[in-house]
Image 1: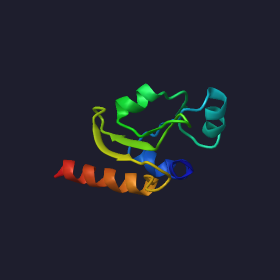
Image 2 (image 1 turned 60 degrees about the vertical axis):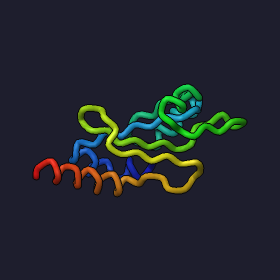
Image 3 (image 1 turned 135 degrees about the horizontal axis):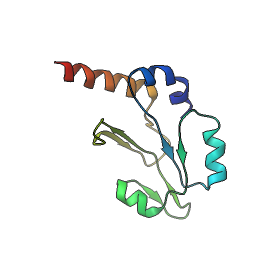
Length: 107
């Protein structure tokens, strides 16, 4: 998530807004939010994970990484689901993808 905070200027220039959420309680989520420059939600439940189609880890009661890219109409245009710490979406990948979508839209 820090990579998104580090690329805030370029994300902002492209109109990209970033938000995150976790199963953590508000105090722990606030610690993470203090390290980044975008909103961090808290208290994600198994029901939320199921709605998103995410992997839920029984026993740990945690959601695995679920990364969604929405367009201006709030439609999912890209997604990434993980069942572990690998293959997390990077800010540079999002920036490149949005530039491709923008170029396509312009024809």
